[in-house]
Length: 262
Ligand code: NAP
Ligand code: COA
Image (cartoon, rainbow, N blue to C red; front, side, top):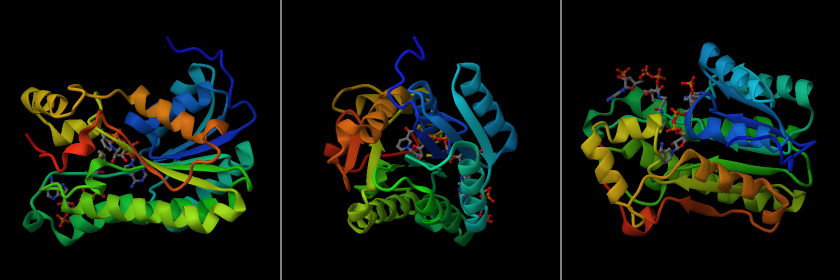
């Protein structure tokens, strides 16, 4: 049951990129429930406004900004709007992503660039433009990676490359920004129920069942389970944790590369 009883993040502000749906929207919702003033961003104006209205309807403080993370200057303008609305940023979550299933020889230049530009260059844009607005010391940044960052999944060359690069960027920034009191950590969700990502990677009920049974815990994860980890990582309980890549995946990543596409 969702409630707004526990205001552990009261007085804090959060910016969540790629949050009109799925895992990132659940993270944004939970941050707002915990009392943070939240800005959410994604491309579709209708989707992002509906998502922000949903959070406000539950009692949270939230604005939505329609912006493509591939637009460096546009991301800068989004941070300026967020700071004007809520002030300096305590929690920065970067999770915008694109995916489709295709063999390397079926991925065009534009297709490869689209995924690299959203998942990796988009992360650069969010971190580079967000940094001046982070509370220092004290800010916590979280990126949403994928099992493809650790193991070479067939039919996922673009995502494998983008997410592995993104996790290395997180580790690099953890080293560079540590002395300023800024922490960065990456979450690797496993197969998560009721998400666009899983609809694309496991498009039939049989493929979905196979994905669930392919994890040591023998089930899909929930968006809330990923959001719980995000809340922990941005809380004071994680104050000495930085530069980590943490799976929330039912043990999937222990097993090496799985298969996608059914
Ligand atoms: P989703 O619902 O499609 O979430 C992606 C979000 O990013 C949407 O809000 C989308 O909104 C936004 N977005 C996409 N391209 C964007 C762009 N260029 N600029 C700004 N926003 C953009 O997918 P999801 O399955 O929940 O995935 C969320 C994250 O979890 C991703 O980083 C994904 O790689 C990761 N992940 C998911 C799973 C899973 O099981 N689902 C497993 C491992 C990792 P718009 O379309 O309106 O822009
Ligand atoms: N197989 C092969 N190529 C594909 C493809 C597929 N299933 N889907 C898209 N592409 C190619 C397109 O053909 C295009 O290349 P081309 O110009 O050479 O024809 C290129 O990818 C870009 O496609 P486009 O639709 O113009 O890009 P976009 O920027 O509007 O969208 C995507 C980006 C392709 C990643 C799109 O799937 C998306 O917006 N995804 C966001 C949601 C999502 O993926 N959620 C799950 C996250 S895990």
